[in-house]
Length: 95
Image 1 (cartoon, rainbow, N blue to C red):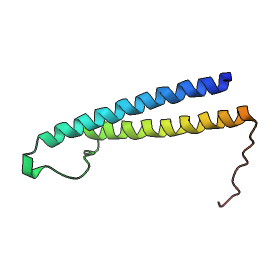
Image 2 (spheres, helix red, strand yellow; image 1 turned 120 degrees about the vertical axis):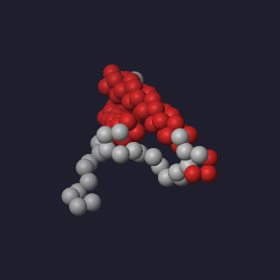
Image 3 (cartoon, rainbow, N blue to C red; image 1 turned 60 degrees about the horizontal axis):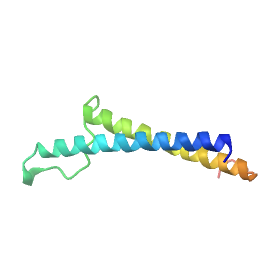
Image 4 (tube, rainbow, N blue to C red; image 1 turned 90 degrees about the horizontal axis):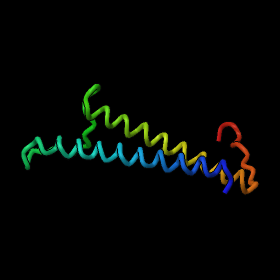
């Protein structure tokens, strides 16, 4: 494995771990928020909270972590293609 691939692989695992932690934090906060309501009156919609709330901050953090993970995944695969000698041409404008 080349150095570039190894660096991208480590970054991918790091961002995956950060995403999993952010997802877990959001889920626990949502579970706590749902527990606040009586059994029959619990909201069935996804809880993301009001702007500035703890729930919204956790939701936004999870979204940022997912974006970072997606980018790390793309960069890892680009490094693998470069190491394999595969050239990928950019898509023409408008496609």
